[in-house]
Amino acid sequence: MATLLVKNVGYLVTCDDDDRILKNANVFVRDGVIEYIGNEAIAADEVIDGTGMVMYPGLINTHHHLYQTFSRNLPEVQNMELFPWLKYLYEIWKNLDEKVVYYSSLTGMGELLKTGCTTCLDHHYVFPEGTGDRLMDAQFSAADTLGMRFHATRGSMDLSVKDGGLPPDSVVQTVDEILRSSERTVSRFHDPDEYSMHQVALAPCSPFSVSADLLRESAKLARSLGVRLHTHLAETKDEEAYTTEHFHMRPLEYMESLGWTGPDVWYAHGIHFNDEELRFLAETGTGVAHCPVSNMKLSSGIARIPEMLKLGVPVGLAVDGSASNDGSSLIEEMRVAYLLHRLSSSNEAPSGYDILKMATRGSAKILGRDKLGQIACGMAADFFMIRQNRLALVGTQMDVGSMLATVGFRESVDITVVNGKVVVRDGKLLNVDEERIAHEADQIWRSYLQK
Image (spheres, rainbow, N blue to C red):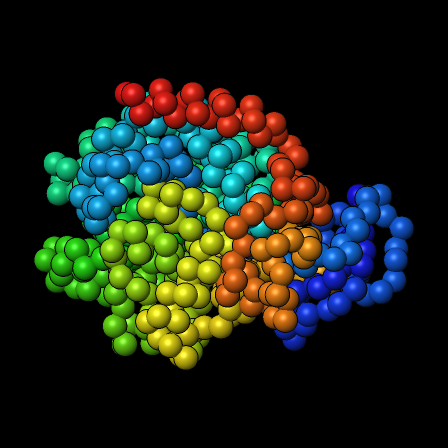
């Protein structure tokens, strides 16, 4: 049985039920699970000296599009809003293949690990004709190579331009094809164990790119298989106009009519909910993945996070796709979230520590992962560590629980541990050659865009 001891941690920010911040603590891990926290030094196979370091629970990313890593920072779309932005980029994304998805996933997840994220949820919904299920294989392969805890969603679209949707014909599939592939993906990859490294959710893309039949049947299939449901919702006013025109319902009412509310459902964005809808989300336990950087870049709006938190709506944090973020750092997302809500809500805004809890405990809740999101006995050994003795952190440590959101952190973290295994040390990925991967990914990116 593999064991790990992290000794003499300067500050241990637990995010546990008592919000404890411990000083000079030891953490003992056995087979990927935290077994002991205290002052006793226990013999272990591997020992990390945490002197002068701050330890945090691993951050949990609840919404991403890793394939978009290869279409970020394109000048043509920098000033577009969501619908025209999507229509332009679909002409690039229709050329996705297995190699592009593998290397974009390595790149995006590698960046996440280097910035303290230990669990990544990816929403992949673009399946060009002929790619079959190989794109999901590529994503899990990339996660396993890096050592990241990975939640995949088998996303989907069945409405193309000819049906009144946004994507081209070559990237949509029939409802029957999608359901068969969804069932295969869950059967192959979903591990329901509370400490599992692989899980799967079903995730039709959005109300304007999928049919009511696909949404309804996906919900039935997900619940029969015991997996969760995810989609984009209430991201823009354009979406609201679309559902009102086509279904004579607001987006949330439409989704509820198809079985898409409850504690096994979470939405990306959730910007344009009204008061009644916020109360309904809280009553039903339906979650929201907050994506502040993406929402700002695409001029989509500001999610009503302070009200959601007060009402008890489950809220997690997410970076969203790299093309609408241009990065994959949840630490950056935390600071942007903190500042955005300070600007819009003043003293009603969540504190820096509240934002940390959103990115850990909150994110774990909406993914249904009770053993993630905090440093406590019986929890998965997912955490990261930052050396305090650096210029960027001088004068910041009166409140280490809030520090990442209020001050921010713009470097790679020193150590990231996932499932009890060190995957980042001294700011470098351990399981891959970063320079080689960067070179290979750059060549594949260039070829992909030239298509």
